[in-house]
Length: 393
Image 1 (cartoon, helix red, strand yellow):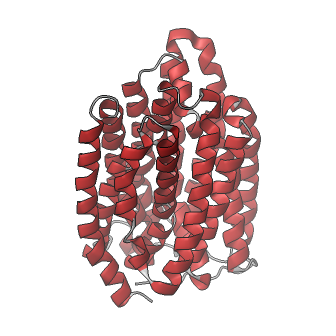
Image 2: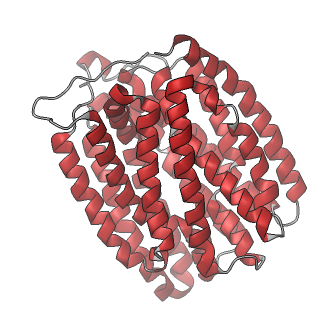
């Protein structure tokens, strides 16, 4: 179901150069928003937030980042303004995160102020993501979408790793620097990228072809997985509260998870292009193992749980996107990314609140619920994967 984008005259970069450049944009931006994300739980806790509040805020943040794409995706497809929406989204990230530095100065209002900024930053993520993924899918098609998304994700995670290990999360104002860098790099990429998304025909601006059944099944599968894959904010809040890890070391633990994500993205992306979408079959089993380990009372299992969390996220944020692009036509791709993310967003909100409410006193129930959800995920994943392997190119 692929459609090749037409090269734009004067756009002189090769596909691989464009993919790497887009990865560098994400690398710089990740130093901003992952620097925030790595410390979100302990940071909100230091302002006086409860575990439930942290779970709701971080879960709502992921829900916004995913759910609002159901609006941003169709807007991109109907207007063709993929580059403009991508730029606007990155600009919101570059502005909101540095402002978090002022939250501790506001006393009791600090939690609300920080929460609003975190949610506004996630709104920027929602605005840019369908357009960015559509642009990347077009750039990566000549070299293999699995590998293209994998390389982009790996560079993306280098930024997250640099933010965490560099301690930037504790100095939010410093994150304005990589935010500006990401916007400069994006402007240069726009001038030289080898593709432009196809312009919408006037007759298509208010009508789009239905998304295929295989895509809908895949969206259900990944939503069930996301519901079980709680936010790192809840995980870090738990291991800091239990005394297993000091708050200052939470970004370092997160950096380790980001390193695992990068390796997972590269490995599964390469296998996807060579062997097909069956590489996704282990994903529900990885997610099912996370809560029992990540909320344990010993450091070893917790670190293993964080590693599995990073592994699952690496697959979800790279190879999964390649499969979406192979299940849906180019004309509706941004819409598909938006719908797909919206389904995951609702699951993220419920999953964040569920984990925050149950991990301390009802861990067994949480593990059981997540396990059942992963059975649903596997049951809907198999037919979607079989469809791609049968008809994909």
